[in-house]
Image (cartoon, rainbow, N blue to C red; front, side):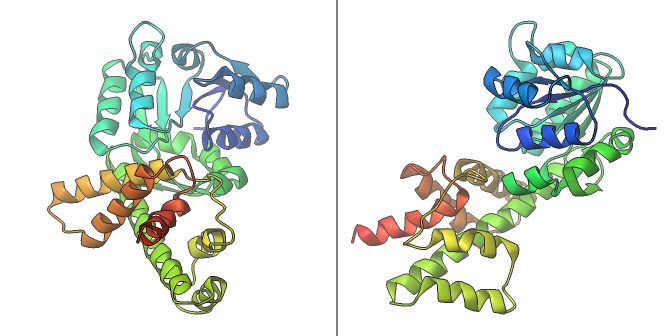
Length: 302
């Protein structure tokens, strides 16, 4: 069984907009809603006849059998799904409606959404993604799914339009846990790269040469190749692909998950503190690679 009819899409931010565009590029028609109407109208203008702009999350879900959502924070999810009044997403859920939530939450928050959808007769699939702005634009995201398996099977084609691989990991919560583990590793790697560049530059070593050495050895990886050059002192290019505040949120959630599982994570905990420091210094909306500035500020203060 494949998906038919127009699909809903809620949330057209850094990730949601290109994901929605890829669904349209694959021949789909969408009903969309975003907190700022400008994004919805822009998507509609660029795709004449393919996009209907809804007035509320409820309208999106009422008009579509399957709705994707990609919201940036737990607060945004709470307001959109459970908000007061009769325009919230859950007000549109009825028997057979399918919700695919691509946001990154805690497993408790994801389960709360799943339970609320199920109470209204709907079906829920969590599908957080590994990947940031460029993979979203090029259709190379990795979907980490948990929840209703029949929904996962039905949207196989749509996931392939937005991503290069999709994993079904089990019950609701399993996709979220995998995403938090993945982003915890990424955040720890970014903190380590930041320390390496900062130490090299502070001891009169060329930062680009350090990156070249890393790229030729066992530590070569796409993350360092993509971010490293922009972190050098003479570049400092932090145009947001994955905002630092969202990376720190995921680190915080991962550390909380580790506490629940009674797993010690000294490296991730220290990395999280560095991200917190960078946020306190005004880098929340910059790319997560701006975490290096927390180290530079500490050195400059001496």
